[in-house]
Each structure stands twice: as structure tokens, then as C-alpha cells.
Length: 307
Image (cartoon, rainbow, N blue to C red; front, side):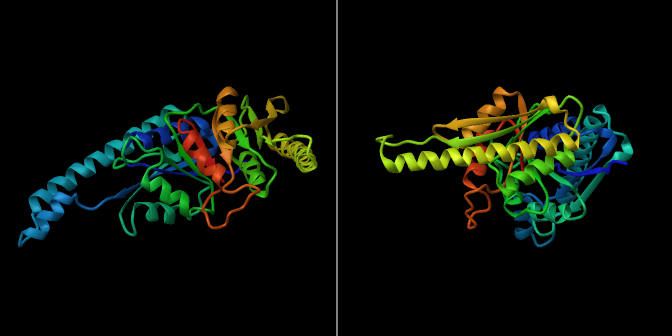
């Protein structure tokens, strides 16, 4: 019997969180998935906090009115989210709700919950309080900064939920992305593309010995990646992906590998991108590699899985 996939989705009533719900509902098999919708209750608005500070007694009427409105709003958001999932084929007993008072902070509380046996944490790019002109909101960024024990999915504006691209450089983290796809993503008709974006070699004089040596090293590295891609393709087909729907691409990046990966995903019809936190060029002082961070911002309309 195939193990159930357990997904945690942060819901705050924003468009971003509903995009996350819609994406998860379409992307995963309802017969093999259980989804928990979590909402963290925030404290009183600043205006009421000011009243509490200035008044000798707590303005109970204002507080109670706001809390009642908040509760009604939360219940509607969760009800709407559950309806989306049920329309996608999920049964009522496959959907759970978790509402809790903010403790350590919204992001911290979501992170704490994510450590309770889930396989995936799914979050929208922006929450209710995030400006519309930013690509990654404060809560999503904090979650990405600290969660390393399971994949985090940052969902853009209603991405296509069918096909998948894996950013692949042959590193251990790239294979983590492959293994993530093997465990969580096989579905009939789903195409998966392994994409290796390599940096173009620039030299003032291509006939100089140094540039020739560089080219030889790069060619050797590309052949090595091709061999590793074959190993990755075998893992994917062994896990249930149809052999004819598993492809690989080597693309030359003239400016940015992140841009090349995003463009390849777009041209391949892949609304989901899987990328490792760090690739071959490890920079341990940063939470994620440069390519991963750039891709997260470039592919802002897609669902980016950071593994």
C-alpha cells in the first residue's frame, strides 16, 4: 500500500494562501494525500493595542467585536479552502484544520507545526500584510530561512500543476530533488524534465592554453552531468514516472542559470520547479545558494519546491 502524503498548508485568507491550496489540491493525488490547513491567530490590531495602553480598562466591546469578526473571517477562509480541495476530489476526512493562537510568531509557529510528521510545507508567496510589489513575503522568507527538514513549496499565481522541471547540477542536493519527485510526484501523464544550466565560457582569445584547459574541464564536467542525469532518469522511471515522459536538457546560460532554468520550465510547460537549497558551489554562510535565490524570484508565477 502506498504511504499517504501529508501536506501542511499555511492559510491566512490572502490570495497567496488560496493559490497554495488550489495548487496542492490539483498537484497531488486526492486518494493518497492528507492536507492540514493551519491558521495562526494574530494579536489585536495596533489601533486596539493603543486603546488598551491609553485606557484604564481594556475596551472589551471593541476587543470582542474585533475577535468575533476575526473568527468569522477565519472560518470562511478555511471553509473556502476546504471547498476548493473537495472540488479537486478530496474527501472531508482527508482535510484537517488547525487554528492556534500566535505563540513565538506566525512563521515560527508554522515551522514548529511542520516538524510533526509532514512531508511537505506549502505556502503562498505573499500574506495579507505583505506589499503587493514584493515577490516573497516576510513569513514565506522566514520559513524558507529555517526549514531544512522537509521540502518547502512557494506557490506563485495559480501555476500549472501538471508537469515538473528539476534543476539538476549533479550535486547531492540535486539528487535530493530527484528523490523528492520520486517520493511525492509520480502521476499518470506527468512529464518531468531534468535541466542542467551551465555557464557559458567567455575568453578574449579562445586559442590561449588557459582557455583551452578551461574548456576541456568544462566539457569533462558536462559529460559527468550527462551520466548523472541517466542515473536520475532511472530513479524517476523506477519510481513510477512513464519512461517516455522523462526528459533531460542541457542549456547554455549566457547571463544567469536561474533565468535559463525558469525559461526552460516555461517553454516546456512546467509549472513546478524543484531546486536544491545549494548546488555544487556551496556557500555555507547563506541559507540557500545564489541560483536558488535568483530562481525563487525569477519564477514568481510558478510553484518552486526548495529541497
